[in-house]
Length: 139
Image 1 (tube, rainbow, N blue to C red):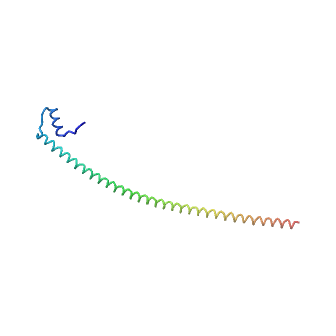
Image 2: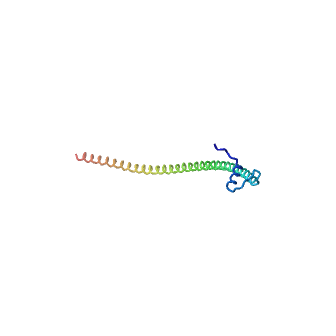
């Protein structure tokens, strides 16, 4: 079973083993050790508190940056959506206008061929009437 040894007792033993010098409990070297240990523990607590404060500040900053990024992304997405909608509307209007022009051209061509067909029907009727008149007068 291992007992937890007091740090001061451990120092007294280490100095005795390594250096062959016996320290007493009232030795000033042990007082310096105790003061140093207290200062280090105090410094560690202060550093821990500063680190926690810094971490909290970083988390708040990260939250603000996240919120700003989300707002910027939302704004950019809305702008892109509006621009795409406008571009699609312009392309639709352009295609509709082009279709209208093509329809007019096709209609004009249709009317032209319809007049030509009506003229051919009239010529054919005249040819039949003429042929009929020639046949009737010859007969």
